[in-house]
Image (tube, rainbow, N blue to C red; front, side, top):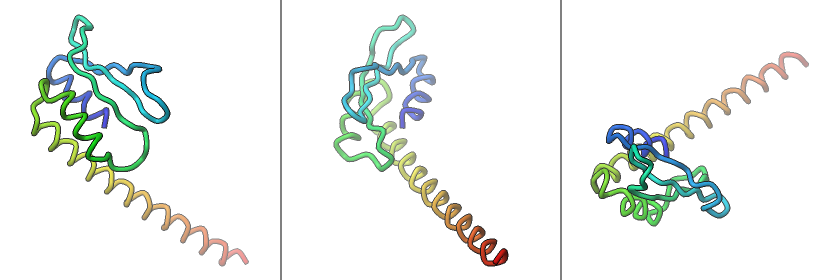
Length: 110
């Protein structure tokens, strides 16, 4: 998700900077800064590999809406979440195929 925000920031001439030590546990806090390094927005994300909760999305929208617009952030985040779900499905399918091949090879080598 931070990749999406980084891409949107670059298009506006901004950059995303992680604030080390600001988040607790799996949470990470980021600033969106301008060319002079002045913070223009702040958001937090979790590194958990699941779809973000509505609270996380709302906080992200509130923190960045003045930079990117309300609907842009929401639409892009929903698209990204859908793509990540699809990626997890493809990855799980690939793992299942690999296990099937391993099992066939085991049976052939007996």
